[in-house]
Length: 420
Ligand code: GTR
Image 1 (spheres, rainbow, N blue to C red):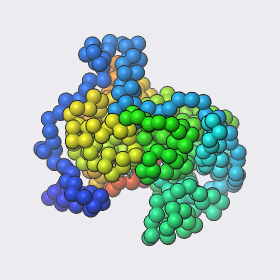
Image 2 (cartoon, rainbow, N blue to C red; image 1 turned 30 degrees about the vertical axis):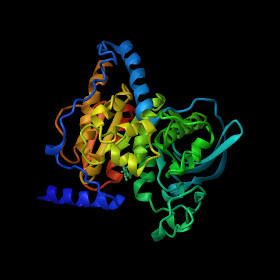
Image 3 (cartoon, rainbow, N blue to C red; image 1 turned 180 degrees about the horizontal axis):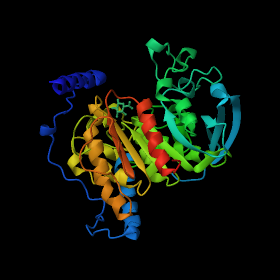
Image 4 (cartoon, rainbow, N blue to C red; image 1 turned 180 degrees about the vertical axis):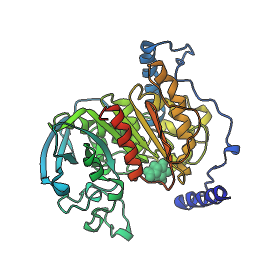
């Protein structure tokens, strides 16, 4: 009864949200039969037998994702410069250093400015650190009056007083519940965050602004979209973090919630320097299997957010069965590094079961590489994390990232960074 009510609510909610007649399926019995591509079979159907074989197969899978889903990230040297714009060495009652740093990315005379907000524990020397994009500006993650309000484009929101795509003072600290900085510092971790809109504003402008301004030129059906642009930016921040003396750049966890979780996964797949990857409720185009057609679908995501993926991804609108890859293979690209995926019970739009099954289906690759993958095959109870080299939890509650989630990421990272 409770599930039926929840499904009805979600159905109406998602329809109303997009103002179009779209009926999402929330019934396992109505899902099509589907077959997942085997990550351990080459495109020519030959089996992958060992780690050397996997390196070759990995390149095939990466190329499929580039051509059919996220688009190809352009190559070419980008020059990185940085300057500290503010520093408070007595943040969080003297426990932490809070620093704002402006990065200038320059290519062929075009520049992009991005602001990194850093928190570092004062005790100790080199710290492991979480790196993640935020949704609305660095100033929204803390109510500290010292953090600059973003100058980048933000979505208008009359209720918040945002009318000219410019953020306002009253949004300071508005997303602090998603960023429990004190808990991280107390556990010995730093945090680096940047506003996703510094890298690419989240609207369809025909790929002109943000990172696209650094790589102008003709586009094709496999040119990158916004999710890939955000992922690329995470790697540029890691380039900078490698130069920060208080950061242990070999222990950086890249994480993201929802659309920014999709970006974190693609960043982790492309950049092996990320030691651990965390996806929080990343759903369709993230950790959830597309072929299940449960919750958000390929057609729905390409219609609501035409700028997120490459044009080729639209070939699979209502044709998920034709996709040559599925999202378990994105997770497999992270192997053998630790990966943590989480879902929320009331977030059926992101298909928690599809996220869990993707973890299970990525596990044979971890096993081939001598790692455990996801322990157990049973979908876990609420608040019962599974912890192998792939970790997974589903918690009660809504689509959000909260202290329970962060505590689980910290517990997971502690194991792999051997702090216990
Ligand atoms: C939804 C979108 C999801 C997810 C979410 C979010 O509207 O359909 O794919 O990314 O937004 O980012 O909060």
